[in-house]
Length: 258
Image 1 (cartoon, rainbow, N blue to C red):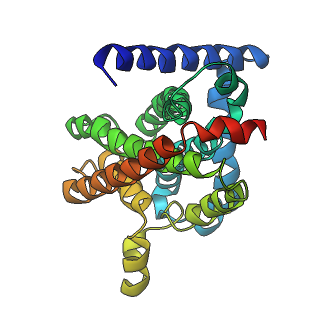
Image 2: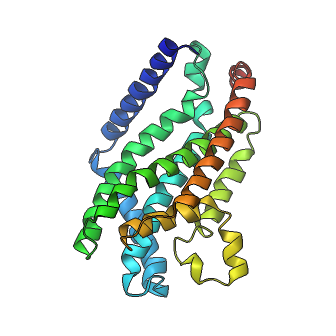
């Protein structure tokens, strides 16, 4: 792909993402406010079910829970939405050629913009609860970038497989539910027995959530070595996803027709 083509496809990603966001906002009476209301209700439900009951973070239960749920919601909704990106755009790919690799990326851009809105709300809530901005917050964009790489990688890989194996959606949906309870959202992984903690640390979202908490709650730098490991893992997975997407690029259209 030459630079001109790359720029055109990036423009397509951006403009289609903006069109989807506008359409989504227009479908709801409260419009853009729903982007905040929906995750706020989601977090409130989990706080009532878990945070208020087990007091996972002690006296810091609410910020502990929120700093886990916000990045998790971004991850889960993006991977789940990205996994069905090719099928969701079946009408488009039957009419005009579009590199299938950019379709899940559109979902990632849409959810990334929504995440920024929710993150801004989270920062305001944390400031009101005694966690004001600190110089270490400059590390936050790096943590977000690493999570974005992970989201793009896993979402693209799921998108490449789902049209070939429709039942894979069950694995994605149930896998995300399982990961939600294995990512340290409701508890501190470091306080688990060493053997259990070692297994859970194989989950890259454990390190992402720990990085958010380090920056926002502990006012400490995240562990750069683990973030680098997650980034490298994400790039490897994305390379695999691109290989599958390119190998079946012309076949996906036939599958959609079939």
